[in-house]
Length: 582
Image: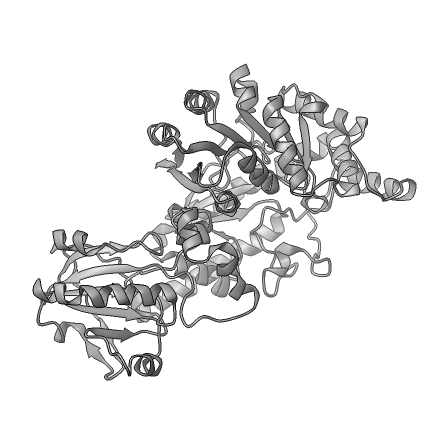
């Protein structure tokens, strides 16, 4: 049977989360973001659900013997993975299971290792459980990512490291980890008693020429120290029915996970989830084989298109998933400019690389699970927008952006204070000047920082330094707020964050980045709930709510003597550190 991978379903009337997130989404402008396919559901699944609806009572439902048989036989048939029914915990999703397993295998304050860049709910799952993220950045050489085993060993050996969140195939970079790579991970974690949460939600989506190995099949040790997180949701686009199968061989770990599951008050799945999963695993092998051909063809199309038209854009080889990773840093845009260009000018909605971690800045993740017609239309829009952009750059010049480093000249620093406008920094520095980029005046963290700087002021003067603080606040607001107790140093008013953008003082891309992965720091600034509440209430802050700090020391000739870009909200050098620099 030939399945339909060519039509473009109109999802605008069905509450698609992916489409709802994109203004103007339509069959002519299909989002290529969230890992959600733009194909009709496999007819075997549709027929099974229709029959089930006619026959079944839609009350509370438990997994059936036929459901367990379908899951176990699929794992054996497709992955040579022997699974027993009693090893399976059914959950509403793999993301839910990440939190469940973090709770089961660690305590608040413990460290959880995350290999980055990675699917962004990994970070949130750790912080939401009151744990601290221990980042292990992937190594990039040419067009291939690899695991930094030395860093992994270092992190795993920490007394507080209890869990590793692992992704295979890796989302977003598309790597399918080989047997030797997996064995090294297992060896390190086994020696240091670190439990592995193995997210294999994409493990059915392997491209021709590559072979996937389920981590638990490596050895009995691997089987006992990992939980394999699987689901039909990516493979058959069934995320909406919410069915994941978490496979845990160790009975003690499984009991802990079940206890957390019960305490989370999740006792039953969606009634349709079991039947949809069963039909997918029992009846849809041929549909899956045809899907893989389509994905491989789409990946080749994008690779060829970029090589022919935009050779400066690097397309990473797709080993697994239907998500292609593109390196667009050579276009010369900041990640925020790139996002604006893609969405506002090219009308191309991909997943911005920065959401997967700071090392993803300048990258894009494109969803290939769509018709070729959709991809061709998207690339046409991209090509036309690039032509317009390059013409504009040629006529007007590129916007000035500079990440300041020691030895650079800081140019074009025109600023306002509550008293004056249009001041030029180069004409207002009689002595070495410390420039601090903070947040906005009404921010409690900013208030605390300003108080600390006020206390440091006399010491800085003794060392022969001036101080200026840049804030995302209106002149009138600062003038009114400081009327009774003015600051002895300049407060620079930059409500539109033009200076921040000019010198690449970026916002944090995610809440985990804002807190530096520290649950303690996150709690000290109000916790996840307090930080998200204004967003959900539709409230607008005075400045950028996720702004990160920066500090520069600039000499009277405008030379940068020291540059520090904060990696989290509290990352500014203290006076003792500055004194060493000074």
